[in-house]
Structure formats: structure tokens, C-alpha cells
Image (cartoon, rainbow, N blue to C red; front, side, top):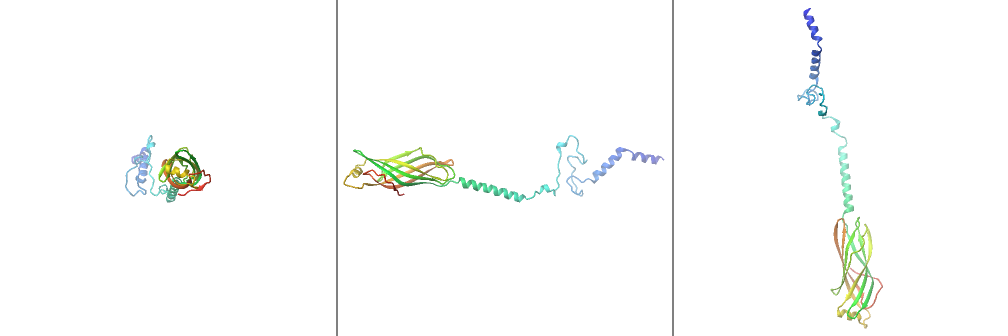
Length: 244
């Protein structure tokens, strides 16, 4: 009788029964870091091996993701990386194509007119030239300064400076009319130009043109030399081409 009563008191103890169940659960629960429960490892630092999270420590959870979790192996990773690299390469090529500096050409076209004025000591001439400026860039080009220097037989006879020229738009060509004042003071040339016995008073005029331009945050200087023939004995308004 006494033995049976003793066993009944043990089986009916609720605390002892709960402890035994918890022990069985912990025994069957795999160790921290183990997938099949056979390998040894440390206990979970969050639940301390109890399988329960203490109250007030929810913000200190540690997530353990198995190595075969699909989230660790995203699909089409190489495809996305290749597409991203291709897009970046295409953008770089487009930027280089549109912003790469291209040539700007200065082209003399013709002599429009030559006006001659005789004075007792000099021969004053106004030579009007037509030039073309071509912008091959995809950005506008600003003309900062334009200088023209006239030479006759290697002697500088006149200079002109123009600083109010407008900008040239992208991928376009613009024509400008340039007038150069050439006062000839050399006595031999004056006699040659004023002589009435000579029907054609031809002078070979050299024009040295220099243009300062600005585009894409940098400046450049273009230069061009032209050789043209003019008649210093009379006015001429018949355009004729020039040579470079």
C-alpha cells in the first residue's frame, strides 16, 4: 500500500512531469549550428538551449539560415550582372561619342570686294572676305576673339580684331564677312598702285587669320593663312575665290 501511494504521488507531481518533458524535448532538439543533430556544436546564444526566447530580448534575435536555403542562391545572378555591365558600357560609349571633341574648321571662301582710296602719301584699301566656320561637335562653340593680319611682300600692312562674333551651334556651319583695312605706306607700292600706265595693279595679299574658341570647358586656337590677289589701282566688287 505504501509503495503504491509513493508512486502515485510522483506521477501526479506537475513540476516533475514538466521537467521530464522539457528534458526529452531538449534531448531531441538538434544543437545550434547542426542540421541533423549528429554533429556537436554550441547552444543557441539567443534562447540558451531552451528553445524559448526570453521576454524583453526580442530585439536581440539571431537568425540561422541553412546553407541550402534558396535565398542564398538567387536565380539569374550572372544574367543581371551582365545586363548591368552592358548598360553601363553603353552609357559610357554614348557619353564619349557625344562629348568627344571634334574638329572646328576655318575655311576662306572668296574675296567679296576691294575698295581703294588714294591719298597723297598712302593707298588705303578695304578688303572684304567671306569665310566659313564649321562646327562638327555636338555642343555649341563660342568664338572668343578673331584676329586678321594682312601682309604684302612680307610687310604687315594692316590688322583687324573682331570680338563680337556669335556662337556657332552644334553640327552647323556659319558664314562671316570680314573686312580688313590695309593702309599701304611704302613709296614703291604707292607708285605702283597709282601708276596710270599700268592697267592691272596686282598685289598678292597674305591674310593670317587666328581664332580663339571656347567649348566643353576648354579653349583652342585655330589659325589659317590665305593668299589672294587684289587690284590696288581701282575698285573691284566682283567676288573671286581665294587659295589656301
